[in-house]
Length: 61
Image (cartoon, rainbow, N blue to C red; front, side, top):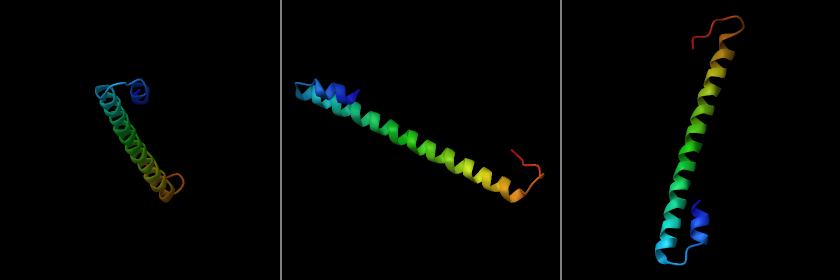
């Protein structure tokens, strides 16, 4: 979205709008990556706890 806007920008305002849209997009990408990391860490911790509990032991969820 931001790259399409900045590619068609012929004025300083258009370039500014494209750069702003690109920054918003990058910020959302960073937030999504951080959330993905947290999900992976939580799942890994849960798997580790289940493995330590041994077979047949009930796991609290």
